[in-house]
Amino acid sequence: MKPISKLNILIANGVNLDLLGRREPTIYGKHSLADIEDKLRQVSPALATVFALPTVELTFFQSNHEGLFLEEISKSWDAAVINAGAWTHTSLALADRLAAVSLPFVEVHISNLSNREEFRRHSYAARHALGVCYGFGIDSYTAALSGLYAVLAARIQSTIP
Image (cartoon, rainbow, N blue to C red; front, side, top):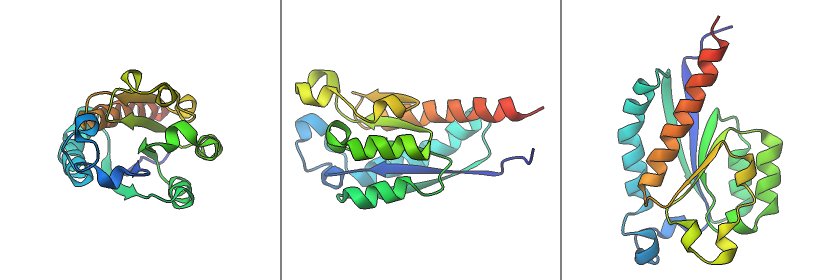
């Protein structure tokens, strides 16, 4: 088997996440989406080293248009961290797409969904996820990326003779 030299990881953010830092700061905090992207760019190399991964390239994507979001997650990614926003709780299309493309992903949310409205406690996508991280503010993304890298490292190691 040919060694993997680079992993392409999608960080996908859905509806209304472009409003982070301005939208309901008591729930979502004061950090912007750019702050999250900067933090992940900073921690990714160290996490990749910890898990002995090859080069990791992060690609950041945000859309308020569900069709564009579904098309992006359908591209050829090695794995993803996905915060679909409210589509998490409403979109069967998202769940069906994630099941169909077999994209290894971790679902992430900034707020603690267990402390939110009843309808936010259900995720249509979560059953297709490797795991779900929520409730730690923007550090939920770091936890999700760490968990994703751990799974990818284990999968890569299992293919080495």
